[in-house]
Length: 130
Image (cartoon, rainbow, N blue to C red; front, side, top):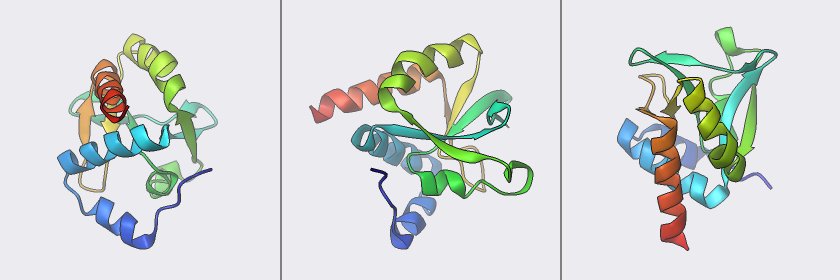
């Protein structure tokens, strides 16, 4: 079952700075076992950040859905379970030389990381919780 954010939680998360949003993302993804992306008829959405092509990611559907407007109005928020992300997406994104924009907001791309770095941080968080 999908976790639903309250309006207060949504406001609190969006008020965080990029580093705080990154920390929140790691904890939420470790807890909920999902990463949210945006997709359209051609596949997943990419953004440019820090001169790199990035896939934007979010820990909750509501946060991803905030981006479905303008040029992205034909997109849908799609969950990727954490095991699939770690075992398939990380390698695929590395192979495509893509970075990850973690929990971007209106002011910028959030923290931009390499797929391996994000995977390592998530695995460490999961082992800390065990």
